[in-house]
Image (cartoon, rainbow, N blue to C red):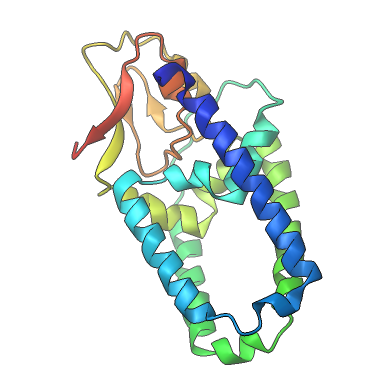
Amino acid sequence: MKNIAHKLRLSTSIIIFLLTVVSVIYLFLNPSFVVGLPLKKIAINVVLSMLIFFILFGRLGCSLVCPFGILQDIVTLFSDRMNEKRPNWIGKYIILAISVLLFAAAVVKYKAILSLNLPLILGVSAGVLFVIVGILSAFKDRLFCTHICPCGTFVGLISNISLFKLRIDKEKCMCCGICERGCPSCSVEACEEDIDNETCVKCLKCMSNCPKEAIGFKFLD
C-alpha cells in the first residue's frame, strides 16, 4: 500500500480539483445560486469539519483538497528537480496575522460584503492567484504552501499537535536521502531521521519512494 500512497493521493486530489473548477465556473455563470443559502451556517460547519480533519491528520488537506496545492502538484508533474532544505521564514506568521485581521473585519461587515458580486470577485481573485502560484511552483516546489499561504501557516501550527504524524522508522532508515531530495515542501531531513510536520503537506511522496518502507503515519507520536 505504501508504494502507491502518493499515486492514490494524487489521483484523488486531481478529481477533487476538477470538481472544484467546475463548481467555480458554475457559480460564476449562475451567481443567483447562492441567494437564499444559509451561508453563515454552511461556513461554520465547513470550518469545524476542517479543524477536526487538521487536528487528526495535519496538513493532509493541503495536498488532498486545496486547489492551490493540487495545482502545484500538477505543475511539478512535468519537472524533475531535487529539492533543497529551505529555512523557516518569519514573514509567513506576519501574513497569517494580517489575514486573520482581514477575516475578522469581513465577519463583522459580512452583510455589506454579501451585497457585492461575490462570484465575480472570487473568480477573478482565484484566477490571478492560480497564475501566480502556478508560476511560482514551476521554480520552487510548494514554496507558496510553506512560506506564503496563511491557511497553510495556520494549519501547520495545528499540525504540531495533530494526532497522526508522518515519522521515519529509525530502525529501517538507511539514510539514502531519496525522501529528502524528493520532498516538495523540503520538510525531510533523512540522516537526522526527522520530518517537520509543520511544513510537511502530506503529499506522501516520501512514503511511496522509500525503498525500506521506513516512513508512515504514527499515532500520538
